[in-house]
Structure formats: C-alpha cells, structure tokens
Image 1 (cartoon, helix red, strand yellow):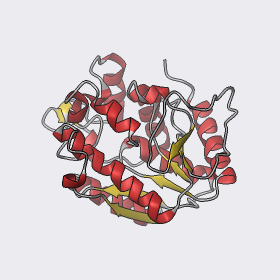
Image 2: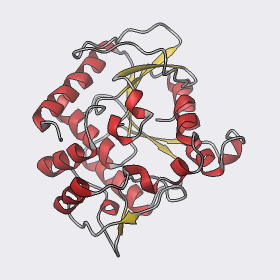
Image 3: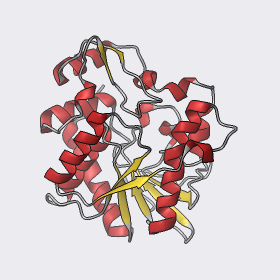
Length: 265
C-alpha cells in the first residue's frame, strides 16, 4: 500500500532541513535516476527553490548518452552547484570482487576520494528501503567511517522521527530522506509534481529501464509502459523485482552486501 504523498513529502523536507541545520558541510549525490531526481525536487521545495549545497555526480564515464544530456539540461535549468567527480578505473578495484561488482565498486571509491578531498560531513543519498533487502536495514542518519565502512549491527536507534545528528570526529553521515518511500510512491509523486524524468524509463521496442544505472552493468527489462500512468499500472501488478536489470546483483549471492558494507550507496 502506498503511503500518503503529502505525509512523505513533509517528512522528507523535515529531514532535509534538519540535516542542513545540524551538519556543517553537506553535499547531495545525484545519480540522475528517478529517486535522486525526486530528492532534488524535494530539496528545491525545502529551500525555496535554491539548493544550498553542492550536487555531486559520481561519474564512471559509462552512463548512457540520454543521462548525460538530462544532467546538463537540469543542472542548467535548476541552477545547480554541480560537481562531476571522476571515479577511479576498474583496475584499481578489489580484484577479489566478481567482475560486474568490481565495475560497480568504482562509485564507492569515487565517493571515498570525494570525502577525502572535500571533507564533507554529510552526504545525502536518494535510496529507499523497499529497493533492496540490505538497504531495508538503513537508518535515515547513518554514520560511516571516513572510508565508508558500514557496520549494520552498530547503528543509532530512530523512533518517531527522533534522529541522532551529532557524531564524533572521524565519522561522516549518510542522510537518506527517501527511506520510507516506495517505488510506487516515487512514480506517483513524480506524476503529481511533474518532475522531469530521463526518457530511458519509458518503454521503447518492448523494453525500458526500471532501475537506471551504467550501461555496462544495467539492462532494460521487458515492458510496454510508455507513460507514467502506464508505469504505475505496471507496478501494481508486476512480480519482477525493481533491480532485475542490475547485473551485479545477480552475479554472486553476496555481491550487493559486499558493496554496501564497504561504502556503496
């Protein structure tokens, strides 16, 4: 069952403002997918049209052309303080990881470099609990070591929107304002708010991207949904997982868990 969109919007705006008030140096990761586009939209609402911190794209050079075109257009039209952070090559990744997981790990290492070079204390990320089982264990304010390591057994309790927002030195915080949203919520909100969407989400020749990632590790799934209304109708009845097109998720049983524990978003 989808939650009320007004309630979700209010909760996310509260989290965004709480983070801005409590954490000294913030940045927002923008993957250019549907979730992070909704997060950008919420930031503009929370701060009256102007996002007051940098927006960072971790770039591996492997995004589809439509993604880069969308990024440049939205950054210009929304006057974003956009930082394009280049990720290290695959050869420098942990060679014990399976090949596709190794390719995905480039963004983890790109984020670590970003943190080292810019000393951001807080990083906002548009992940959702319903997207993947490991993400379901996350907190809204999630402390990490500076290397990005995540100890799932050592996280602060969060009850009734009371968040721990002060952390010791040597820690950075991931802020997840969309954790309570579902995939269906995102699409219903995108329709209601008329949020711009990368056209790759809409079906062409019987395929569309349901979870949009890099072209070497993400693939379109079978679909005839060519509009947001058709996507919403499809999601109500589909039994196909959202990340079915993410090749690295299926490469090894623990691939995604290994990525997440080492700092993947």
